[in-house]
Image (tube, rainbow, N blue to C red; front, side, top):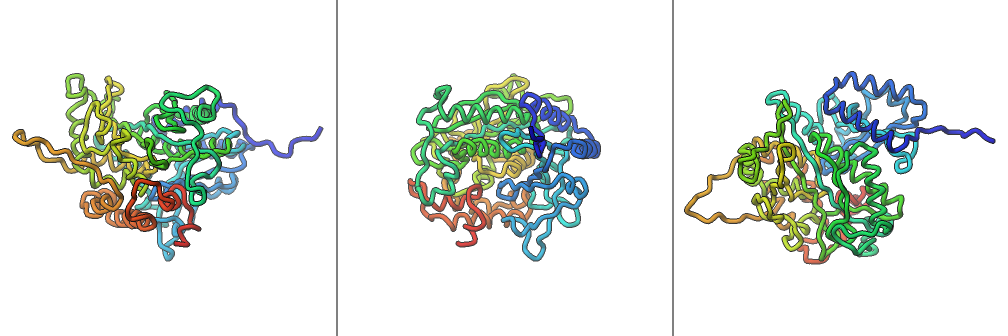
Length: 479
């Protein structure tokens, strides 16, 4: 009997869940970063069965990038990790290309070995300049710093939970092959809550939900969605930065599970004409230092507080200007169609699912506002930072005139109008910073120019192939 040549780390799912939830609790308890760094590095040094550490960061458009570092190298060089920023769209120019990765040791995940391979753990990181300062185009650090400032000054904690919809299609890399096939093939033609226990869609949902639990998501429910082959897996709310990280992990693990089943998990907002699209409804609330939900008011309109209504008013007032941040692709404007339960009206409602913001039924713990107009391909860090900051600091709308009937305003229905609103917005320029505002608008302009000027009703190949979550640098360089 031969001895195995390799002994890589493989942890049972129930143990994984306990370990990842313990890390999450330490993040929320704000354990000293230096203590966490020392603890994690000691663990990596002592655990001989780990072969590599996956360090990930997110670019300006929301793409997740991952680098695998040899464990021994990372332990020696974690404070001097660099990469070529000029190779990342929206980051640095070629003459100032070197950027640094600042590892967030609190955002540490053990990975299920049957999905991601044995012997690996994952860490989130932020992008810093050569001098060590947070890089302006890294929205994760922008969100973290904003949340920390609010906590220090006002005792606020920003809370969030996302409802992320996706499609499951037959075949691997169905999005990259769209230019040849010109169609997506459904795995199931069921619908809302309808899926037999043994069919492929239910099997995918079951597998992906188990991976979520193992990674500490604190699952609540999962189910097929309204459109054929559409799914949604819900999990508990957490602090904004943790939840934004989970958006990236959710899409990553869904894609990985689907690929292992020879299928494709797609988060294109509207991949198929004639059916509902994918949204990323974002539930938001704010609590004080004692944990009290500041959005709750049992006697308030729709059960929420004046602070919550002020938060809503500021977001609605800037709805058209924020639309490009929340709907960042050519394809996402197909989704904003009221015929398919999509939110295109700039208003708030307790019951109307066509409203940009909904106020769900809630109690002292769960009272919140739900921003429904976000597509799942948005940069989660940029979207959440923009919404929270707008809700707390954005310009307020005019007081309604009792003698006039209020006029319903609508979100842009195409990326060109959305670009115009965003480019001309002094507020969004201040929100993102002038340089980042221009970079982001330039990227979106480039996406628009690679796609048909008139959308029409059929999904066009270029809007899939040049989608920022689908395409690759090879294809872009040929344009």
